[in-house]
Length: 86
Image (cartoon, rainbow, N blue to C red; front, side, top):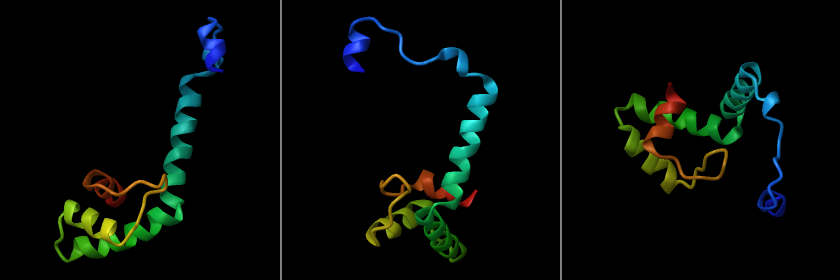
């Protein structure tokens, strides 16, 4: 594919990228994030930790120490914890 791009070929079909297609993709990503096992487990713990008064950063640090990873294999950060809980 990289060689085709260098040669000047246009890849993909921009006409397929409609507003409804973009929204459908977004809805699928949101649903995948909500139902993935790693996120479900992390959300349960984050909810418990938040109820005892821990900050988002403290929760992210605690999950990292416990080797919890996001759906994409990354460490949780405070913004990810915020998104999980809201």
